[in-house]
Length: 86
Image (cartoon, rainbow, N blue to C red; front, side, top):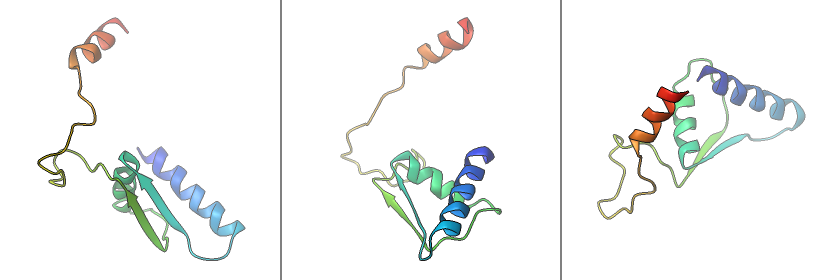
């Protein structure tokens, strides 16, 4: 996980070195959830703001509408079979 956050920080550093002006990070769907987690990382880089587009913050976030159509369903047996057979 920290490798991904370090990648985001390196990207922010590069953009700030090459361009003057405001820097915003944007995440779509689960990418918005990734940025939300990045915000909690003590070594994150400071930016001017964040945009969350169609965020999927997780099933425990209490942000889903009651009439929401599920994006995907998980068939756990496939993951178990894959892990068992390598």
